[in-house]
Length: 318
Image (cartoon, rainbow, N blue to C red; front, side):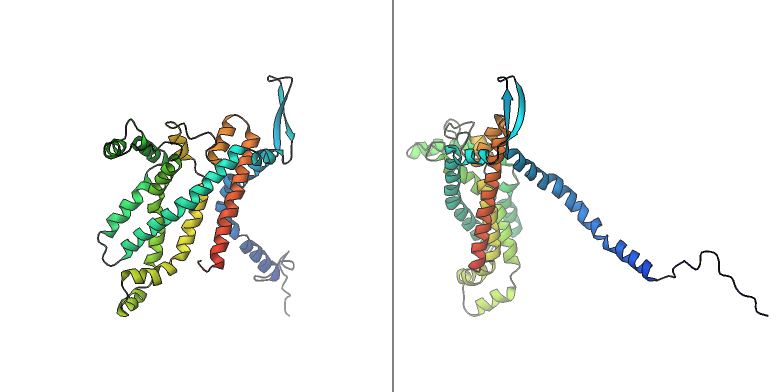
């Protein structure tokens, strides 16, 4: 007679391997794997980027008041857009924005033109010692901004500069720190610093161009200048747009050079640039107004850079 086999206790409720509950649990575990890759980026992004932006916007909507005189107890009150109205009615802010727009219209095209020319020369077949010259052109960008500004301040100083002494001996004495020249003296420092950086971006784009295009152009009788104008420059337009966006952002955030040159020139005021104005306001403990100035500057930078990018897309440059 056959003996019935008794299943172990609890086996009737146990799910076999590969059953739907186990597959659903495996899918849920696999669906959370992306957190391992996202969190190392998301946590610093939120903590050091989004949180400061949110704090600045919050501060720009407030104002600190004191009851009982200057030594009274401070309290923070909500003022809405009053701080932004004060920013747009500030003549120093408006003149600083206008000054930076003029700076960008003149300095950025000149800098990018020089960077493009240097990149094309390094990419040409006749160039020698390309690695050496890449390092030489990039070296000014590797120098800290404060050090570079101090170096140029020495060269601009009428009492110390050998350049001023030489020019004074052969002609009229230049005043690099005068009211009419100081903006372009700053532009010269910025151009010297960032031309090599932009050149490397454009040069990297040139290196990605297939050699067959240049060989086909040479076989058709095109010279180096014709090849650069008709083939290389149109192909590297996206790199030019990228460097243009970077330059627009850097122009509106100009800070280091004016701060350093302000020590030796009275023609640079506390509101010479919008960024310097925000710093000066914050130094006076008016943090809500400084936050509103910073937010307006950030929004203006976004609008100008995004507008330039959209214009480049419509023109087919990127």
